[in-house]
Amino acid sequence: MKKFALIIVFGMLAPYLLLAQNKPAYVLYNAKGKKLTYGKMIKTLVKQDVVLFGELHNNPISHWLELEVTKSCLSARELVLGAEMFEQDNQPALNQYLNGKMTGKGLDSAARLWKNYKTDYAPLVNLAKENKLKFIATNTPRKYAILVSKGGFESLDKLTAEEKTWIAPLPILYDAELPGYVKMLKMMEEHKMPNMAKAQAIKDATMAYFLYKNFKPGELFIHYNGSYHSEYFEGISWYLKKSNPNLKITTIATVSQDEINSLLPEHVGKADYIICVESDMTTTY
Image (cartoon, rainbow, N blue to C red; front, side, top):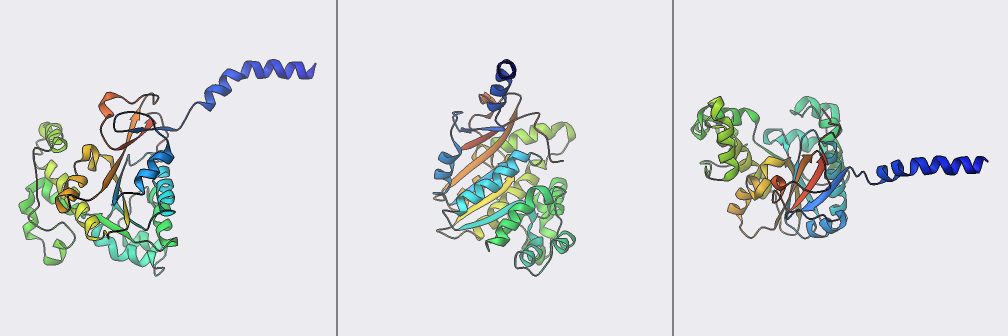
């Protein structure tokens, strides 16, 4: 009798169990919107010079996959890591931590860490520390991007010689016709912020500059940045190609949708690989 009852209960629960088994946390797509496996993506990534991993800053799937992708690539290539989340003037403090000369608490005091550092970026930094990898602080100090947003690139001319070492060399190459910058300008028109795209460009140019400065042939540089900084092969990728058009660059973007079984047309072509996550995913902040 008990056995019969269990069979009935299982029969009632089976549809829900099956549904749970087919509820992935993410789906991976290529640039054309076709599904592919994680393993196939890794086989391509390890053959590149640079991987630009575009994240949604508060998305746990982005951060988990950043760590997993890095681990997978580490087993096949010599790596250098770098991130938007660290500003170039904080490189000395980051180096001290990586070399065991500073504690995590000391790094928190010495560097301007993002509020989600402990949950989302510390695992990457600690992976670098454990494996004696370089971790490059690629971003411009935020205050210089704010300067540009208010006064254009000309506002950078008044920086000291030391401050100029923390940004891409002046004058900053800039193409206002790049679709990403055009879109940003349209978004900012109502806020009367005509230099906002230039503020984005100083970040893109600086990240590309310090990434390429620390790149060595034979190594794979994995860079973590907000997805917008490398979507549609613009931003950081555009500046890298200006430095070296032969550089093999692969981009990853993270997008959010209500349903992830097929990629929305608006996301097709955003990157070589697109991580699609449900819009109701729990955020890290």
